[in-house]
Length: 610
Image (cartoon, rainbow, N blue to C red; front, side, top):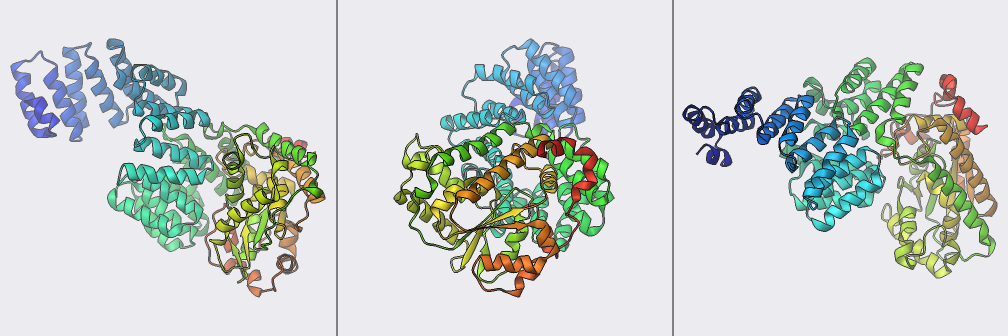
């Protein structure tokens, strides 16, 4: 009867029936385990632990009792004790799959990835098609930096279990981390479709939509998630983050205030508060909260990386440059970004130049599309691209669309559109005028949706500098604005930002210098062969001579001057780059020659830049 009551979730009855059974059969471990489970379900973990231990005294080799005790330890936060209990369970039951899965998941949280992978692989040999085990194994691979292996596991899981919501959710997280936002959004939405009310997937989708600038939908989804599960502080923190991005600091603090008063403060609330702290002059409080987060032994590696960069940014603003650099260094060497392969990016630069050099550029086909709507802002990240876009977007005839993935979408569509062997850039000289016209129309169809009536629409994906040879063929009447900044300031600013491994050269000063040289070489090559107009905008010149440079930019885009472009900081629009807060302020000079504050640490970068 006790077990039946437990299965029916009638926990008080189960405890009562089990107590009677304990008196009737004092040497039977089972009723003690029933009481342990029932007490754990009602939240009385102290009594649950006591009854589990009693059961193990009566049956020291009872594998199930060790599983229950391990679960109770984990709920109490006694993680090493939980590991010991789980391992004891496996000693007495070698094929205990549930324990292997629990142990693998727990060891992953503790950062013991090799051992975690071993237990999960053992479990998977016993139940090869288990979606739970496969998902946990994928998470281990993600934490090890094996993102492609993790994606393969998720995709295999979804072939077998297409409606397994957790696999869709975790795959979406990884795709978003890898910059594949369109696919990530699809999997977040599929996770919610498979499991309506899936709050964590709603949280992920809300954050993704925020990053894409879809603020209204993001806020709607996040507020619904908060209503469904009010006790999750990171969802409220994501809502506060939206208000912070919109510049509504008062509302952001209103949402954060109860989160900051709770103990412990959640990582999401802490990171959001750290963004607000400079404007509130609460630097020390934010730094202390962030450092306290780092004492959490099971803090996810990606969150730990975010915190390192956040501390570094605050200390930099406070003038504590030596300590700031150490936190930036920790962020750049964290396990969350060890999947970076710097050589890949440098090889891409060289391959593109090589393949375009082999084609006779002057005689190559071009699109027949005559649209002058696209304006491409390119350059290295952190070179002033956001500032230039904000200046342009302040003009009533020009719209700023942000960092658009549409050129990347075109490149990725080549195998499906032209055949599996047509991989960019190897197939560039096989594209006909007809092909290029179709690709241009595909891009413009997406672009025009951002502002159908605008004379010019700005695509400021910085790394489109890689594809200027293709852009030249697609849009004969487009304009390209190339942003340039002091190489040391550019590279240091990249190093100080968490790109989550999406820019594989960004986590090493030496690799940054090597990649920067390759970028400059490619840009000089493009300038020698492309036919569409290209304008260099030097960040330092813009800071020193704002009006002159602004007027030159507007003239280059062939629209009449408008004084709003000088008051770009008053333009209300969502900016989804790390510079979103800077473009709310008038021109300032503190970012010029910033590298001198860190000169003592920049030997590898200076040497690489030569």
